[in-house]
Amino acid sequence: MLLSLAVALAAVGAVCWIVGEHRLQAPLRLLGGAIAGLALGPLVLVVAGRVRRGRVVAVALAVFAALALTVPAVLAHRVGTLDGVEPAGLAPLGADDQVVSVAGTDEPSAILVRRAAGASQLVAADGTAVTDLATAAGAVAALSADGRYVTVAHAGSTRVASASNPARSRTVVGTPVGLVGDVLVVRVCADERCDERGYDLRGTGPLDEPTWTVDVDVDAPVADAEGAALTIGGPAPSAADVGRQAGVLPDAVVRRAAGQGWAWVDPATGHLHGRVIAPDDGSCRVVAPASLDDDGAVPPVVAVCAAADGALTASASRDGAPLWTSDASAPGDWTVRIDGGRVIADGTQSETGTGGEIVATEHDAAWSEPGGETVAEAGPYRAQVGVDGMDVARVTAAGQAIAHDIATGETVWAEPVSEQGGPLRGALGARTAVLLDTEARTDALDPRAATRLRVIDSATGEVTVDGWSPHPVQDVRPVSAGRALVLVDDRMLLVGV
Image (cartoon, rainbow, N blue to C red; front, side):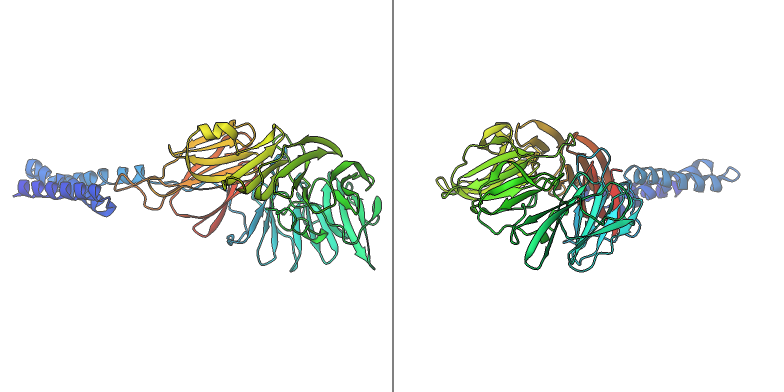
């Protein structure tokens, strides 16, 4: 009788085990293991039933066998939680909230979170502190391009503080148009006249007097924001728009003088100097840098001009001296974006009707596809993770996420991906790439909602984070220096620190 019971339990357990594995049903698989383990009890009683305490031994061995066939398997398929810092006081990000950080700095920069409702918070570089910047409705919070300062502009005045000590701020009259090193440049308009003023931020005393003041045209526009999508011939931004879109103040100031054109502004004196960057005829867009390159240097000022047929010509200059000028692109209908001193144009060629992206950089006078021939030779791709002034990241048909330098085509990093469990999600920003993918379930005990998160520092190609989350990743935002803000289970985590 006991032998028959043992055989029956083992058979039922085996069936449950096999069906559970076949249908990837974890409860059935675990039930099968437990039943099969319990079959050891009756079998032991057949052999040792007459032995003193035989029943106790049989029960103990049955329980041990059931646990041995279930618990190790469960532990082997467990997915650990993501390692990161939970910034205290940082509420989950909304879809329209903006995360701003700057790359190329010696140390990871602080992180500026700008809420769609108007509030702004500054998160310490290591995520251990969150400061409410007390921004009013309509205020514009921004970082300096080197990450050392944070500013809040509102109602014609600007508060500025060190990003390492944002609670201690100083205030000046005017709207910021740039922050060059330690010189904050603001524009002040009153009684139908405007001037620009430079304030030296070194020291800790009040900013009572500017180091220089220069009159400017009342309607003088400012340079466009780095990274913004621009249409040639569209309206130029005003001083009130500086920092509003990108969240970073320009690290160079340029000014359009009526009848003369665009020129550099010397931050030490406020006067124009060097060659004219672009004419004053509405055919060009000028972008001042609001970032640092991978070597910590400030990119050049870039101007893009369009001919009557839509052909683009780009040029770059630094400190008033020209650096390079591109050939004319194919005529077409283009939207341009300038990032890191390079130009990315997206649109359609007039002659061929071909659409796509073309770039102009310091490496070649001719316009080309991002990554040039190297990317074309890599074969077709099925998704694009992102493109910025330095890299283009794509997913190839062979199942590999790969980033190339948009100018030279050099491979920056490459990572295998699995799209069997769902399409890859990714983002590229602040010189950081983020990849999210899921593995197809091949075992009944594989987690159902686990997501693999990889964070890559594009400046070095280093994978700074490679982990799994047992819960779905609700949102992820790349942050400079190989970090990311991740929303998991309604909790914000800063990973990569």
